[in-house]
Length: 185
Image (cartoon, rainbow, N blue to C red; front, side, top):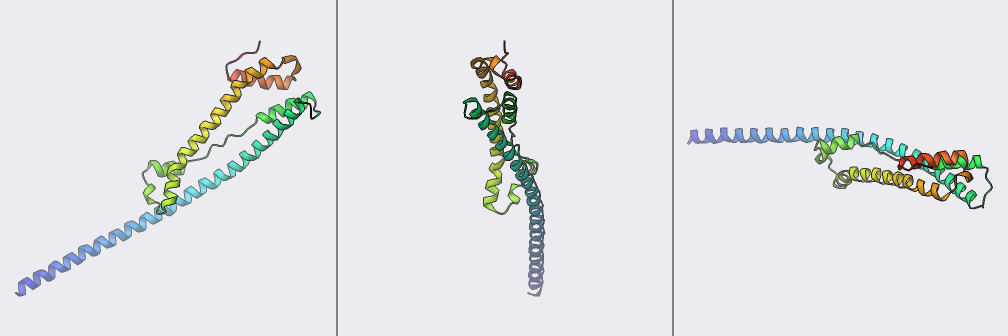
């Protein structure tokens, strides 16, 4: 009976020791995951803040381009009096549109590395999982806008007699036309 009790006591000590070791291992692993999560979140925050600054600058650039395009339009339809040189400058300013291209290095590293599970917040994890697709979609939209603008240049050149355009307007339209593969006669 004593041998059985000693064996059971030894077995209990071993089981308790194994359970304590597993609990300690799980604790340290979870602690390491939380530290890694904090590093990933800090990297993402830095990246998103840089994107925020870039986006604000791009928005300002696009607002200036939009204002120039509006003033140019009003001058063309006769509502504003603008010199032909100013018209050419407005055309060039209206074409200087910024294309927001968000940095996604930290996010790409998180997603491609398979570490998205480190993020405990479920809503944040879902938002991060879809962010790269939205960024890629925005890039494609910007490329489509540029392609469409370049495709419209030959039509504008064909409709607008070149002698009524200022040299600056004509040069800018020729550049857009060249991008679309059209050559001015």
